[in-house]
Image (cartoon, rainbow, N blue to C red):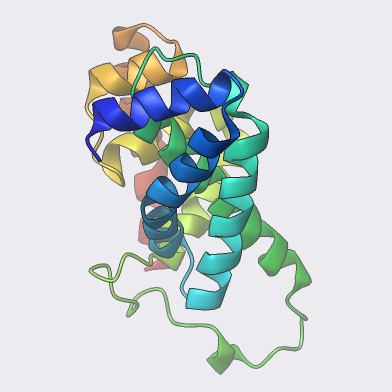
Length: 179
């Protein structure tokens, strides 16, 4: 489906069309799974996060206001679901778990989309400067244009660019100390 067709389907689903909602969820599932796979190293974890993202899409569809593309909004929902799953798994990992169970972030394939060092850096950045995380991830990981990020987040373009610049400046040392 084209982005316009997906947007139209989302509008119909917002209006209460259950068939449109089912079709929308089926159509966007591969996109949501792709986003989750980009964050989580294990396929089963990505599947779980994707399922959570689709539940969030269905239950929070009214929060998409149609200012930007539905697929852009979906990226944010899926990214947040994957990051939430990562935080949950990280907190549930036993302290005495063998080190070999966790991939070395310095050797984890960037091409495969899994950067555990980046996730750790984003966790730190979110604790200290949460306003920079989402714009930075949308730009540098998902390669969304500045204008689309501004529309999606409801921020002025200059603020988005400044937040991304500051986020990059704060993230560089975090990545360097983990390398």
